[in-house]
Image 1 (spheres, rainbow, N blue to C red):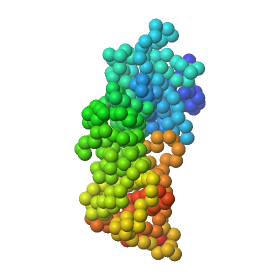
Image 2 (cartoon, rainbow, N blue to C red; image 1 turned 30 degrees about the vertical axis):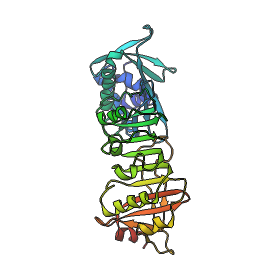
Image 3 (cartoon, rainbow, N blue to C red; image 1 turned 120 degrees about the vertical axis):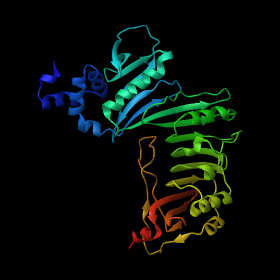
Image 4 (cartoon, rainbow, N blue to C red; image 1 turned 90 degrees about the vertical axis):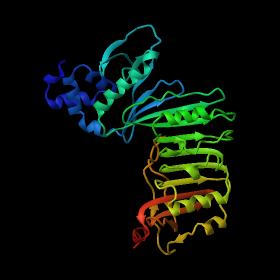
Length: 357
């Protein structure tokens, strides 16, 4: 079948019923076929929100195509350890790569030799970048990384237009902070980090790129270890801690109010074992919306949606707020049970209060 001989509508109907892995493979046959696919699948490609490389502790990524409703597994990239059987080789970005179909022809397996791993992944990524375009988000998600006494360094390649996200579990006896810091320092700034860091035996470097991540979700023993409330430079943070001091919460809010720190902060949620006392509320200079008015609700798109659930931060609806002196911007403050929520508005106090008029 020569696809180019058919009318556009027939071409589109055929391609609409093909899996992403099949479209990818077909596009490698010729430049003309690639051009036809991109033309016929314009709307389908526009619906793609992200391409994600999901890499577990085996360091062999799955490639998922995601849109608003579903994830499609397109490819697995694995080490070439099998005896050649049913393989075929195609050139991707000028590099010969072995492939075979799996899952009833629903997804591809791409193979690499261990010494050529980075080059294979870079070639595939460069092709996908050209195929789907720059409007799609590209993420490298390293999950299930367990840092134990002997240490483990995840494979994080340097790829164009890719945001890196990592889920890290530090062992109770973890003592190799230098290796962890080297991973952060040798990589791009992370888009999102999920971390369990109970009973850390070594401090984090105050200059660590960990604090530069756009989004952090962390479970820790004490709110000061690591001191996210002191050094965080990103946009969204969720901290789940067993112990805290009211003075640390007061310092955080007052540093934000003064403009000394947290200039990029949009959303903070702190889950604690105990509710902050009245001393905290008295010390941060709260302002209050008239009790007869319905306060506006603060919510934002999550920097990274780890579980494909609610794409937005938890709503904050509160009559209490604070104001930053440097630009007069507002942050809603809500304490509910044992949780403190802090939502920064891109509005001055006057603009904020005008919402309710």
